[in-house]
Length: 171
Length: 171
Length: 171
Image (cartoon, rainbow over all chains, first blue to last red; front, side, top):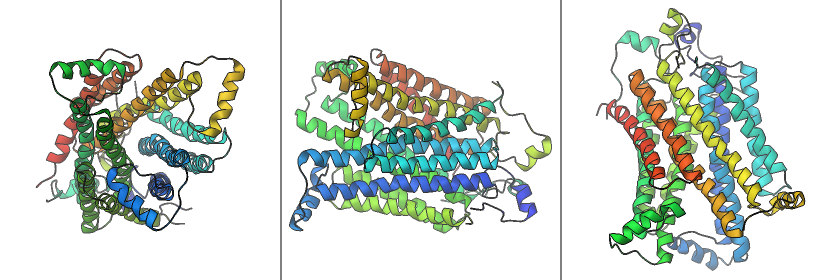
């Protein structure tokens, strides 16, 4: 991918802050953050699919959906596995919230420290790939420690981004 | 509402990046995000109110609150409905986290793509209203599919905002 | 701590937007947000430690970890206390998500309202300290209402930051 490059020299001069799509680091953060957040939003849809498949709904007003599925004649699994399947997606979604949101927020401050483009891009790429692998490892599921390691790689790349932020503050 | 417009021409020139309250799109995002986040923060207070009403607390050290309510002579419902009432608020709060936070984060990058003001404002308005309706539908509760549809409208307006972000990246 | 001060006058002039590390309010938000988010990320590690200590894992593929701990001969508590210990950390983590993320997001818009440095710094400091105290009160655990009050102080400092944001919008 090629980032930024649009705009003439003058517009770059007057908006040469870090937070502009003419800064390739910010453009990279924007695209990788959006892709990772879309992955996270996908968990909502996946939860709904699994709820309909297993007819496992939370509230009494959702009984209308259960009746609908029964009329359509779809069979559902046993109570035990129903909860397991939906809980697995819910826990995956919660783990995304706990990791992807801090990534984007710390990423925003990290861009302000004007990191080298390649260094920043590899942080974003590694984080993005680690979360894709984490989701696959959680939902297939792959044998442990695949899930733990993929989570850890993303976790460490967030922590690595906080170092230049905390260093840039003069104590 | 009228956004921005303050400041003289020179200050607009030197700070004409997207991320300034002199950019009406950013000002609109700031206000709608703040209002939606305040709604989300309100769920914490509502959870506490429901916990006291139903004397349904989580930890052993919270027993002091249970004793307090018993001394005040307030009656509480049955165990079954107690959990249901508090769980309904908790699930609503979690759904807010899963949707409102991505809205604000993707909204921040969306502002950087310099969308048309009207187009951006309607995205923010529709999202805000969809979350208000979602909360009412969850807590009253209104018959389904009101809650599902109000969630879906907000969800689609987030996804719609990612399109210009991913497009602005030259591949 | 001393914030900003780097860069010459010209670079300050052309990048004198609010969102730059040359703006001491933004630099303060960056450091306090990063520190609070690191604290929140720490809850993930603490959850894992407590899961291993109590051998309380969620998924079937995690049984490999349970077997590992059994081979190492570590004893674990009773089922009841195992759930309580891990649930306590999980609930603390969720409370962090519900409060720390809105703090950072509202903080970003708050910086755009150009608040006085001292006023902003005290908001960030009080919030950070309230969350540290909240975590200690939750995990020790300290007698109530320590946890409730420390949560409330942080909550009110977020709400206090929304006032200038909503005021800066001309209706």
